[in-house]
Image 1 (spheres, rainbow, N blue to C red):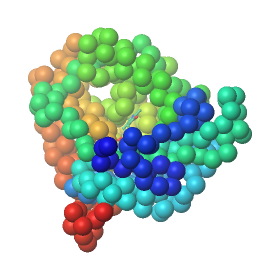
Image 2 (image 1 turned 90 degrees about the horizontal axis):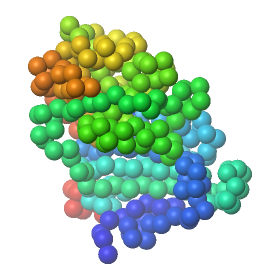
Image 3 (image 1 turned 90 degrees about the vertical axis):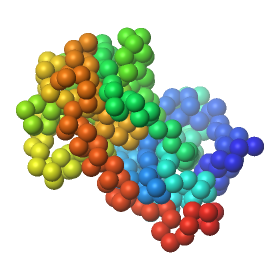
Length: 301
Ligand code: PMP
């Protein structure tokens, strides 16, 4: 038996016993929403913003989360404490619940709530030192007027198709365009470029998720004297940028040093990227919710 505890439908169960119905519409149709969150030294970074995004995603698809935001926050903190974690990746999933085989959510009586917290598998240090190779892919980002990228739904097929293309092309990550050909984001991360000291990132209305890390980086950059412009740009602008970097809960801030085989800058992570990564890593241990405010981790179960 593993020692990992999962919060499932109101209680903590062991990992092996954490199973959901094959009639769950999350499984049958991708009908549900989720969040990926991270804790650093017991501090859940910007939990409030992640929960706001989760509740907004649920509101958008008319899915009722059977807990208040405060209750769910406590459940997440308890999951971390139950597993005695400090650096963790947290996955919150709200599915429509079990229904019949028809896609109508009306047959689903009860949404399911799952919280998983695991010790974090950090990206290797070399990746931050070397930087990523990006490749633009033919699959376009979901149009916001069809399925908004702001809905962090269980249906991630758009992003999965993009990741498959990147794998086939032998690059580390995909660069996704929208239906007009403007740059949007990676498969699970936001993109920034730096040109002549100014930082650019696509406005979310073009078809990017409004990343929590993205917003933190915009704030940090502004606070440290950089101008950040949220305006549309094309692949050409990426190819001729001085620096390119991606942001996300898992990736944090990571340079892309090659895009469609064009070397970016001198082919190494740039100084602005490195500065922002340093600032970000300072921020993440303080800005959020503390899991162990007054107890030692060992005493917290
Ligand atoms: N875009 C997509 C499509 C994502 O899935 C993610 C990961 N949540 C991001 C961007 C980055 O968002 P965040 O910084 O909130 O993790």
